[in-house]
Image 1 (tube, helix red, strand yellow):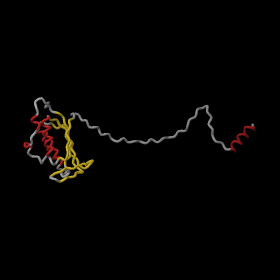
Image 2 (spheres, helix red, strand yellow):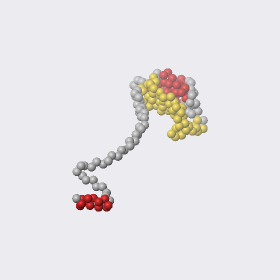
Image 3 (tube, helix red, strand yellow):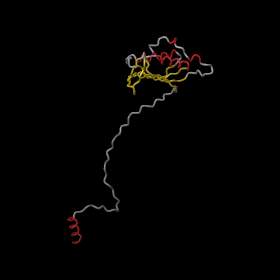
Image 4 (cartoon, one colour):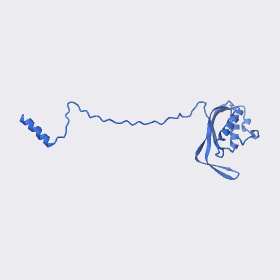
Length: 177
């Protein structure tokens, strides 16, 4: 945003909106990538300039996410002055705000010409927080299995292996009696 100082020179299509269009404020969310040439210390200043532009145009900021340096999932390219630039990292941030359709059109045009913004997306949303809650990883506790002797019904006989010598002695005891 710092590269765009004079926004009055921009022609806004939104000013030509007919009266039958609903001009009530709506809730939007803006996600943006700031070029990595901007330092991590300067990236929040870019986000602040965007927020100030929103406020100057009648918008109300609901929430924000400060820009954080991230590796991009895929390389992005931008051609400037006949030279192709490749970006593999950027500073990603976001702002949720409420503004009328004329203000959102102005914001889009300013973001489109700002060379510090690599890419941006604006979409309509709701005021409530719709982000999924962060769930902590579940820790699995292993339980040791304690083996218990197998219980047999009272009426069942349990067969135990017997040696021949023990069997012969048992038979002698029975016969002697």
